[in-house]
Length: 357
Image 1 (cartoon, rainbow, N blue to C red):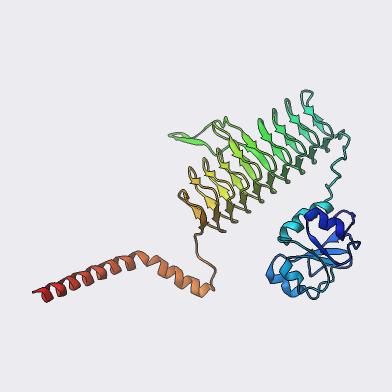
Image 2: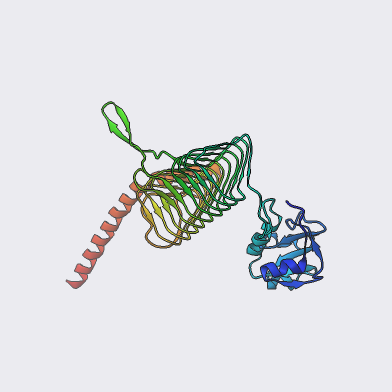
């Protein structure tokens, strides 16, 4: 966290919050309710942490109007404390800089830059970076150590590639993106045709287009398209260790949690949420506004917005074994139930005929 300090009034103005307490109070950092000390600003967004509010040592707390009425200390009153915290957190980011600051272009002597590459103003390229022919790096881009940018790839303005990111050839990254360490964009999709002699590789001739303001977590992989492009629309956030296969399209502002996998040629709509360790089969369509809970296996298209789940919840092992045993008997139980229903229907029909006669 940076050493920046702000008055409570300045912070309130930034997030359009009502200031309760001394507006000149100096805030030097952010912390949780439990760990905050003098000079820290905390926040309460989850009711489960309300029990820490009375004992917190924070200088001030971001609260809703309702919570502020029972709090005796200084606070910033905001309708969405978590969003307010998110907006203020960037003030203490080590990469935060004033909007009017223009850094000088820096290329480490240990970087390898092809003569045909174009480097924008204020770009920072670290040691061990390899930039191949035809690459275009826009203004303000930061590239960490040992990244590799394949030929004809493009990186948009103010995008940050952490150490060890690999962009294959012909990859396009938009502006204001963040790619964390170990990300690989543009690797070959899993395309093979069976033959009598074994698998025949299908050349992956498409590319990858990542639009603006996308964040991609560590060790996530995004395959290039077989013919068309794999596309990640603006505002998408991808967690760590996600697999995005060839020709997948992910709509604007969709969020996908860690260890999920999306098979080839599936389209996911806008404003979707995919829980961790979920699997989505190939050639499916998922509409806007779908929420898939953690560890769900999606094997058919989802054509209506809503919340979808699969699998069973956790149980003590002994109970889980009994549940699985019953689950395996469902087909037999269903057949027996159908037989019983037919018998009841037959008997009811016979009774009605006897009454009529």
